Image (tube, rainbow over all chains, first blue to last red; front, side, top):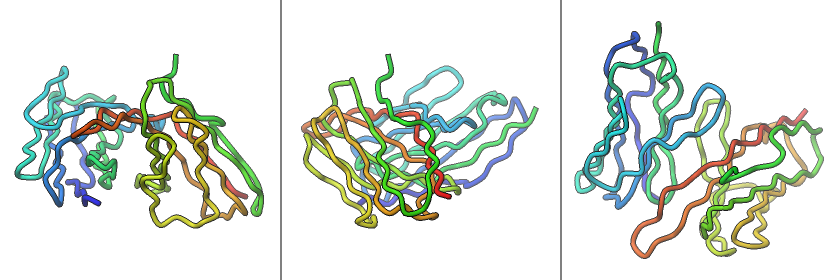
Length: 104
Length: 115
């Protein structure tokens, strides 16, 4: 299966700061997803993004399939953004996640 | 109107017991998955089924057996439970396309505690 690497593993931000999370794949991908696992354990769909850029409020994602990576941008972070962010390859294998803590 | 639902949400049981976790999706998807999330939050895929056929079967002890009575259901049966089986188990579903799968959705998880 496709290997998925996420970076950074941990990220601590002050409220209002911006951040970029990265997902690298061992092979080219034709679709990938970003998820947010909130502190209550729910896995919430953020983006389904085979290629290009998508935006949803303060979050946006860019996938460059041929270069085998995807980026998740969080702008003006809020404490409710805290949790673990995962990306998943087309075969639904996940990276180890980025644990984000946003401090007030 | 939950898209992917798992039951039970919590399960506490003794070592050596056999238990099942049920999963149902009402999205009309043809592919379903089981994941195990350990205390370090790593989401490890265990199985996937497409139209009731086993597609992915990762290195999982054979005490774990998935059963798919129809494409809307994928149940997970665990025999002879061990302490190390304690984890959160997630079910998910997606639709397999000709070239790309559709967006996947997850259930709320089942927290299994073996004592």
